[in-house]
Image (tube, rainbow, N blue to C red; front, side, top):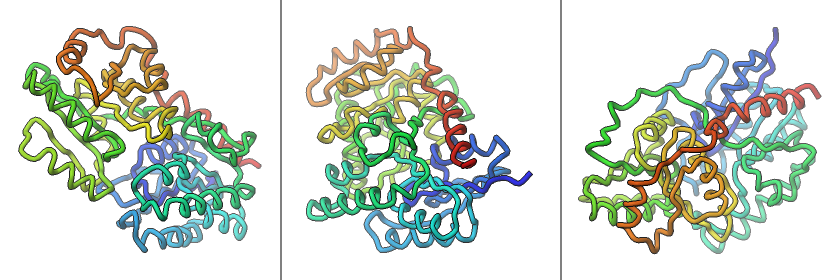
Length: 374
């Protein structure tokens, strides 16, 4: 049987990104109907899969000429692979994906993982002078290429309201729920020795890493068993330097990664061995208010109790399982918080299976199949 050549591509996500590889890639490959190719940022991981081909690119910084040229390099890979279906994971590939479809046919799908325009306008990645121009450029690309795309995948339910350019009849919400990963369990979690707070994922000021440090410091003063483990990648050099300075000489705070991409399996291992997960991503003028972050699914699926911001959406999600304590990092009583952490019975209701990727997998397969057979 001739398999359909399908290509999933990103400029900034690592080639072993959990959504591109573990969820989309593996789910599509196991149907035995697709020859899956994944293009992403170079990773230290050695990846092998009988139905998936990996093509890494990079490295480059977020603001560099190499980044501007990467879509054209990926376009060359398109031509070499000759995919019949392309799933592009970023606005940076909208133009080259559209050109490929016009010249060579096939179907193209836009997997929208962020509200890019809102992010550009409201984060400090780019200078204030550049932000409105970059935001306008991204939205222009999305509007111009919209008629050429065969389908749109939304990683968040709220994007259906926020992104007016997305035609609802050609779109589907596929949330970034947790795909179980086989990892070696830690020995006994060392619960009697330490209480480990975990900050995982993208490391940045906007994701609340410095609030995580402040919370830990206050709790550690009361109970020396309180430790913090920070694991993930920090893309902004200024945030990394500030982080390294903030944890210097504090043996109860450990950094895993920072200046390199950490394999997702290693992050999951830390989630399984931690005592509390921190979800402190800042509201950022409402950009994050209605988003269900990946770590909410990862933590709840592994029954990891959480300390979360007073975000209505997150509180509603966590209340289904009694999974979290909501707090304000700017004003909290450390003794009262520690007592609450010690005495609360977490995960005594609800069904954590709702946080699993298996709830999204068939929706993805059906959506891609319908587009493939057009």
